[in-house]
Length: 147
Image (cartoon, rainbow, N blue to C red; front, side):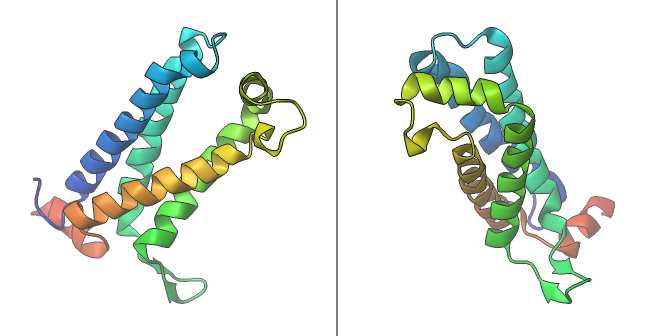
């Protein structure tokens, strides 16, 4: 079950690391943004757990057929983490902007919620690195499910 290659291991590692990052956000968010309510804090915890799971699942994909090129773990992790946080910013732009305005002065480059896309890409990279090391990647991870 927890072998290498193993899709189960990839997802477990991804969810565990995502949960750890989400827990950091859950615990420290009130220090940066005192107006943060429980819904936002729980949302951060569950969001990053989900991002970790997606990165883990997508470890099966190592070939992009339309471009006929392979996808390395570092690109896949950056892409999925960044894309997921882009979707988050797209739908929650104003609350994220309010949070950053409470942390930095208005007009600063750091008040753009799109910095969360960079954060997601970095977290995705970390998750995919660990998931690939511990759980493998590619078709072999899916084949291990049937054994």
